Structure formats: structure tokens, C-alpha cells
Image 1 (tube, rainbow, N blue to C red):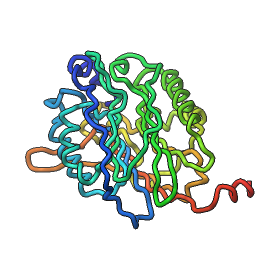
Image 2 (tube, rainbow, N blue to C red):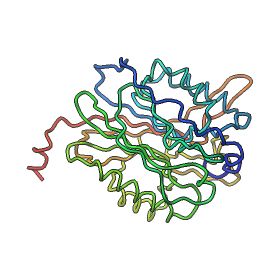
Image 3 (tube, rainbow, N blue to C red):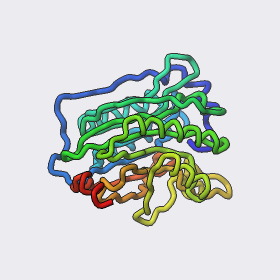
Length: 308
């Protein structure tokens, strides 16, 4: 949700903040012979208790079906506010993604909701810390937005994964303050030999070069080129859930990295998920999803330091 909809959240989100699960099964169906870690980061536009708007329940089932047939090891959702929709997706993906975390920053207070950050994984992750942003404005105060940091291991290589969703619409100074809070979180658990991967809806347009570069600088993070033909993640011209008269296309969703020298290669690509059947045709969210395929370095950190 980029422009509108928070008024509905404020009225209908009383029960949406329950943190229903954080599953930790004993077995892992992860493909042990896989040589690349595939991550999907996706704002799925699932507002709480408004499933009669935007066909949320129908979209949730379509999202579950899409991911049942996918090869992502980790899925990072934003705006997974709706309990009903999470239940649908969780049931469909429980076997394929048995490690499920969140939604982060649950709340028991009326007219408040969680952060909407929900992580599904084929591999076990250890939650290091969750933060709630101190800085927020407008309708974003209804959601307990923040960031959550995990640590995992892939083919013997440790990595840290962060999920976040920054302030929408309001002046950039709010997002800048939130980036500073994220920077403190990442610095608290920083290790020289562990790459950090930052996923989420940063609500910062790449075309706004000054604020985009400031975001990267504050986070001490790196971005990269996009593969494929699709070069926007929020598309007001072609996405039926985001469409606006005289709209534009923007990149506001990112998968960034820190300690990038520990990653041999990372390929980013925007994915457009569209559901089409005779009676119901729609994009599955107002955001397109961001995919990252990560190959970790096998060069010892000591060797890198010695050569630099």
C-alpha cells in the first residue's frame, strides 16, 4: 500500500496484531545440493480485516499457489497484516516453508497492528533482534513498523537477513531517521566475516537521487543493476492495484547488501505476479516482488583483508 488505505486500517485492525506463530520444526526440506540462495522480498498489500476490498482472500490463495511452485529458499513479506490472509498462505505453504517468523512487533492495543513483516523459510533462521521505529507519522503510526534481523547458514556460509518497511508518503526525514535506527541495529550484530542482506519496501524512489544515495550511505549498503525487462516495483501505469491517473513507475523496493565482498555474485530481478482466470484477473499486489539470487564467496576473509 503506497498512497491510500491506512484509514481502513485504523478502523478495522483491532485484532490484526496477534502474533500467531513462530514455527521451528525439527526437520528441514531444504535442497541441500542447491548452490544459490534465492530470496524473494514482496509487499503483498494485505490490510487487516478488509478482505472484501481488493479480493484479499482470493489474492492470498493465488499467492500461496505461486509460491508452492517456486524455488525460493526465503520469502520476506511486507504488509502481511491480515490474519485471514496469513492463515490462507500459511496453510498452503506450511510444508514447503516450515520455518515461519512473525509478524514482527505484534500489539495487543486496539487500533494498532503489527509491522506486517512476515518471513517464511526453508532453512532455519535465528532471530537476533527486532526493533520498532521511534520515528513515524500519519497513518503509519497505526502499524508498529520497524525491522527484524535474523542469522542463518547456507552451505556452510553464515549470513544475516534483515526485513523492514519504511514510512510511506511523508517527508523523507522520517525515513532517514528510520534508516539511522536500522543502521544501529545492523551495527550491533555486525561481524567482518558475515554478509548482511537487507530486504524490504524502503519507500524511497531510486529516481530521487539525493535521498536514495543518502539512504545507501546511512545504511552503509550497496545496491546493484536489475536483470530482466521490468525496471519498476511500484507501477501506477500498468498495475491494476496501484493504478492512478497520470501515474508513474518507481523503484522503491530493494534487496541491499553489506559486506558485499563476501558475496561472489548477486542477481536482482523484479517479478510481476498476475492472476488470470475467466472471472477474476488481477495483479497479486500493488507492488511487484524483488528477487535476489545470491552466491556467497568461498575466499577466506583474512585473504581479502590482506589484499586490501
